Amino acid sequence: MFADRARIFIKSGKGGDGHVSFRRELYVPNGGPDGGDGGRGGDIIFEVDEGLNTLTEFRHNRKYAAEPGEEGNKKNQHGKDGQSLVIKVPLGTVIKDDETDKVIADMSEAGMRKVILKGGRGGKGNQHYATATMQAPKYAQPGQKSMELWVRLELKVIADVGLVGYPNVGKSTLLSRVTNAKPKIANYHFTTLNPNLGVVDLDGSKGFVIADIPGLIEGAAEGVGLGHEFLRHIERTKVIIHMVDAASTEGRDPIEDINKINAELAAYNPELLKRPQVIAANKIDAIYEGYESPVDAIKAEFEPKGIKVFPISAVSGKGLKELLYAVNSLLENMDSEPIVFEQEYFPGEYNDNKDEPYYVEKLEDGLYSIEGPRVERMLGYTNLESEKGFMFFQKFMKENGILEELEELGIQDGDTVKIYGHEFDYYK
Ligand SMILES: Nc1nc2c(ncn2[C@@H]2O[C@H](COP(=O)(O)OP(=O)(O)OP(=O)(O)O)[C@@H](O)[C@H]2O)c(=O)[nH]1
Ligand SMILES: [Mg+2]
Image (cartoon, rainbow, N blue to C red; front, side, top):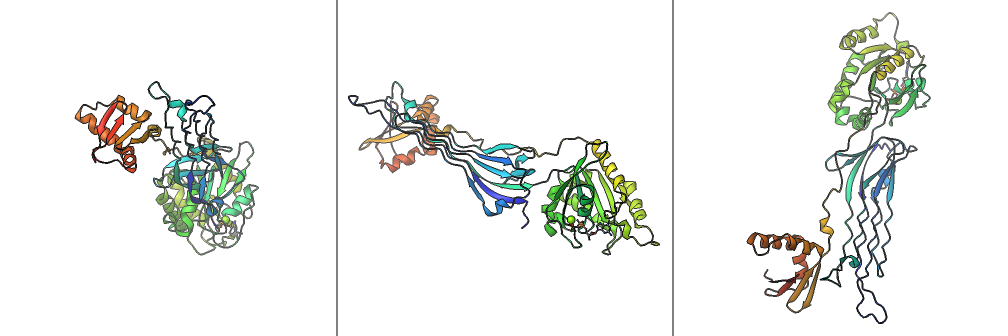
C-alpha cells in the first residue's frame, strides 16, 4: 500500500487534579489543608527516525494519546506525572493541522524532536489556598485540560535534485547508474511508487542527493495516477532533471511530454516552474539512425527558453557526466540550506486562567456560598455597585459554570448566595 500521507488524532495528557484534604493527627482536631498537587500530563512528541521511509505505520493506528497526570493526594503527596508519547516519523515529514492545512512542524533534520502538544499542568492542591480569611479551603485547582488535534502527516523527501517525467522514461535506471541506490527497474508504468534517494559523488565537488520521483501523467495536479502523492516530493528539490524518452519508444512526442509535465508542475505549485530545470533526453541509444534527430528538435524548442538539453543513455552511460556536472554547477550557485516549511500553526496557545479553582457549596436550606481564587480575583476588579459591573458579574457566573452548579445543588428563586462578604438574592 502506498503511504506517504496519513491523518491521525493526537491527544496530550490532562494534568492531574489538585487534591483537597486536611491533616488528621491525634490531638489535632482541625488540621490545616494538606492536599497535594496533581501530576503533569504527558506531551505528544514527534521524533525523526531515519530508519523509516514511509508513513505506512499510521494507516493501522490512527489514535495517539499521552498519559494523564495523576491526582494529588493527602499529606501533600504529588500525583505522578503522565508519560509522554514519542511518535516516530521519517525524515522529511511535515505535520499540518488537518482543519486549516497550516504547518505545525517540518521534521526536516536528522534526530529532530519536537513537542507538538503539551501535557496539561497539574492542578495545585488545597494546601496552596489557605489565606488569613480562608484557613480551610475546600477547593483545589483542577488539572489543566489535555489538548487534542487531528493532524495530517505528509512525507516530502529531502533531496537537492528531483528526477521527474512520464512513467517508463528511465528515471530509476538513471538513479541506479549514477548513485549506489538500487531501485526497481522494469518495462512498465509506475514501477516506482515511493521516491528513491541516492547520493551522487562527483570529483571535485561535495556531491548531491537525487530523488527518483514516481512517474507523472496528465492530470497529476488534480490527483490522477496518485499525482498529488508524487508531486509533493518535488516541493523541496532545488533543481529539476526533467527526463523524457527522446526515442519515443512508446510512440509519444517528447516535446509534448515535456510541456504536459511542466503544465502539471505549474498547476500543482507555480513555484516549481521557477526552479532551475534541465532536460535529460534519454534512450538516445534507441533512436533509429537516418531519422531527423529528435534531440535537435528538443533543443530548438527549449534551449531558447534557457532550459539546457542533455542527450543521454541511462543504459549505456553516454552523456551522464555532462548532465551531472551541469546540475552540480547549478546547485553550487544556490543556497545550500534545505527547503524547510515554516511553522504557521501553534497548537494550544490558549489562556489558562480558567484553571483557577472555585468552589460552590450549599451551607443550609436557602443559603449557598461561592469561594475560590478565580472568584476572589474577579471581585477585585469588578465594581458590583455599578450596573455594568453587576452585569459583568452575572456573565462571569454563567460563563464559568457557577450558575449551573448552583442549580445542580437545588438553588431556588429568592435563596441567598454568599461571596466573600457580599450577599445576593438568587433569581433565575
Ligand atoms: N534503450 C533504453 N532503454 C532504457 C534506457 N533507460 C531506461 N530504459 C528502459 O526503460 C524501461 C523503464 O525504465 P525505468 O528506469 O524503470 O523507468 P522509470 O522512469 O523509472 O519508470 P516508472 O518508475 O514506471 O516511472 C526499462 O525497461 C529500462 O530498461 C535507455 O537509456 N535506453
Ligand atoms: Mg522508476
